[in-house]
Image (cartoon, rainbow, N blue to C red; front, side, top):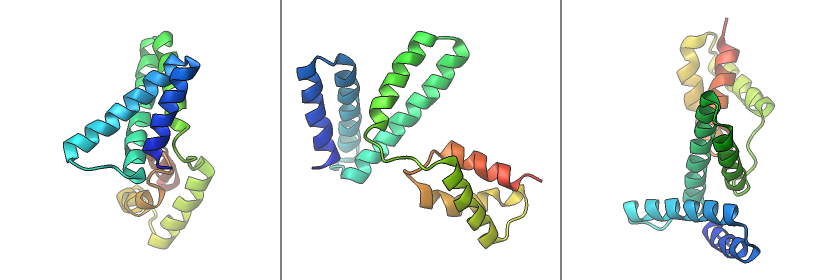
Length: 148
């Protein structure tokens, strides 16, 4: 079963169960997928749907951070609920330890010793962790490893 079909089926299930929060979040995700398909005149496969889901999750994380800075706890709660639903369809993200181990091996392989090589390390590391790790976390780990 494709991911898009799974999302559609889960909307129907949420409607039957009366779960309006999940229903609205899933409808919003399906609308974002449809928008990408219409804009690009394509039909997304599971990889494309995962890209849309990752983008939606990233937007929620950024919104949560912004709302926390502004002290809007009621908005944070809503965004966190949406993020939890979105993340349930994403593959398990890599942990900081896994990213650290991979980054250490790439740094050793490239022979980078200072922060000037951050771009080089990120260029090699990001394709390996695409869709499996948060880019901000990867960047943070690499910067910490390359600090003097």
